[in-house]
Image (tube, rainbow, N blue to C red):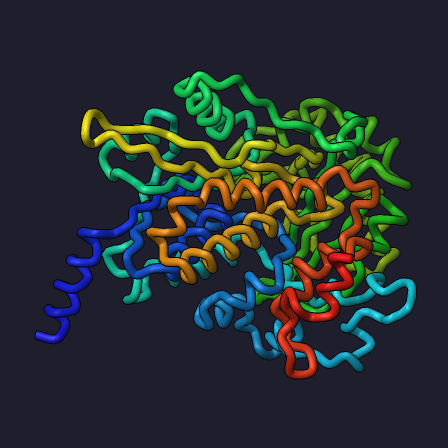
Length: 461
């Protein structure tokens, strides 16, 4: 009887629910789905995602507040290996007297080890933890649906006509040779409204085309303490960024690019390597093999004879334990700065009295991304969605939807002004960004850091 009443109440709420479509089940898409579901029990989310498994190996740096606010069940999954890592190492309260955390009060205020305490998470692990939580939590029962399959513009139109959403979030990644949805949906929306075509603008760190190349290597470390190493030193001295997770997966990501010791190495990279190593899930190994496909001999020769010896030697100099070559995943990943100025659009569907115009928001990589030295493209989307979710909770989702496009556009304008086209891209030298991604929401000496805290006022001054 009790559960029957609960079901009736749920069905009643859903009859008057605000419906949201999220396109893309990457970390931004899943995090956005979670934030919307948490913001209102009158929200219903349909997630369009083609991947069947969450196995992306990259390691990414997360905003402190976004990870801290995740449900305890999700955090327990991310930091489950208590013998090797403690959640308090990354998310616990701090003291101003802690010299290894709190920024110093001298001229190098922001040249602080604080960044090593940022959550560094393997993407696949984060996706799986959030998805499992959304799919199984009773609060979200009958309010979340995942639709598998590659989304096209035709699919987008069909889902709008049948589901009748109040909001659509485009959380797809940057366009690739295999998937052009972000570009195609922008073209469709602009054409349907008689607007001019848009191309992403390149930031001032994208002028030199030959410096936009890069190679990722990912592998499982033997221990989790590697995340405490400073990737800044590696990147400045050798053209290699070292990024190890502090979650339960022991994942390590090494990113090499044409800097210091490596420009000549990258000049010799054959064009075919960009295609042969373009797959993330079925990637090359450092031994030159894949599970499912053929690789050209030219790519294999360059990888084994040129690239591998140089990079392994540099890593060994920094006491990075490199596993057997067959356990190291290698894939090509060009990184450069790009952005769209217009990240909020509208779309009209239906006919006659059922005609409805809704906001379309572009989030994460579909809006823009800075280069690998900042490493915040994903974090930016999570942080902005966190702010939108807070507005939905505070005002109510009905009110928030009336101005969500305008609000998001203003947020994005601030991001473009303060985070893009920066001469020095290193996060630790940007006070406002250290506050936004590393400090905001933390508890220090029993006080939560927010916009009224003295450290926040410094960043805005």
